[in-house]
Length: 175
Image 1 (tube, one colour):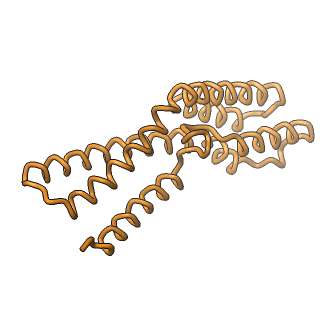
Image 2: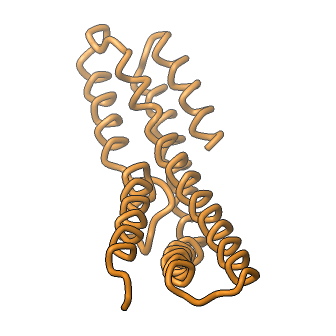
Image 3: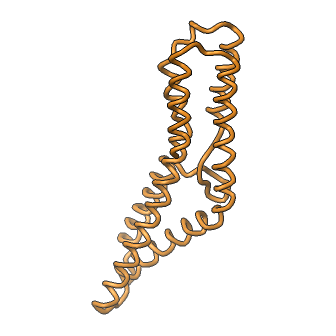
């Protein structure tokens, strides 16, 4: 994440001076090098991130069900509550960090919104626009089975799923 922040500062410095195709190409290459590195990290951690999201959600859901409808002793209630707390904390940790990586990878797009492109010549404007489009269309971050990138919307979707599950479990009281 620090590399994306450093790149953004470099990009801001570039935009505050005379933008040339050569200097823009250096920033573009560095951006895609960092994205490549993040992709390699995602490939290495893919089974762990995906596995933990699935097992964490499953653990939370089953333990909530056991807490609500199981005949548990006080010790078991504390143990299940602790397991739910730890699983929730770890799930939040993965989702927040995945979301931060994804949002930091788009920080140059936010910086470019403050830049007046009217100062650029046609060749530089074309290179600048192409760089922004490539950046916009590049999904960078931790992924879940390469199906989607863990970002803020994924975090909210998972939270909504858990809340919906709890509501359904509360309404479907076993007899």
